[in-house]
Image 1 (cartoon, rainbow, N blue to C red):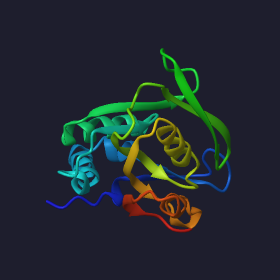
Image 2: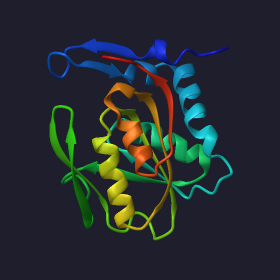
Image 3: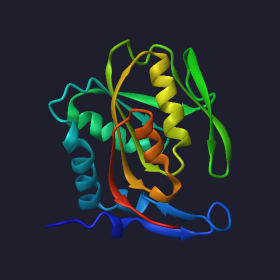
Image 4: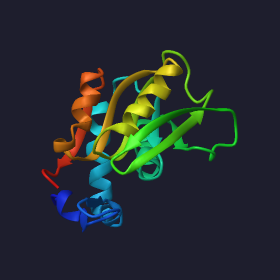
Length: 177
């Protein structure tokens, strides 16, 4: 049975503000076959290439990243919003389509030279993912790639990551919304 991942992603117009078409992957995650196929397709390119850790961006990147880490036989590294981690953390500012924020990770979450795969549900402008890359690089991780369920190519986020030397793997694209 083939699963149409794109058809399981709900579109919510004018959220979080007018003019934005929000792509809600919670409907995809709520579908057992859709979630299983998503995890399979996101993990597949990274089998047997030495990934040592999967880093997931809060919050949906935790769900996907944890499952992908399990599939790849690695540990999981949470990248969280400021103030949510209990141990010493390093932080990075970033811009969203609709504001600014800070993400953090534990200062000992990865080791120099550790091969890391970055995971999130969606890449739009790439601000959050670029901030996560900066955090991982500050800890001298080797970022093998970044994987996302959804790419919004008109916002150029994946292109920006690629220009920064990060290979991106995405499952579906939505244009012009």
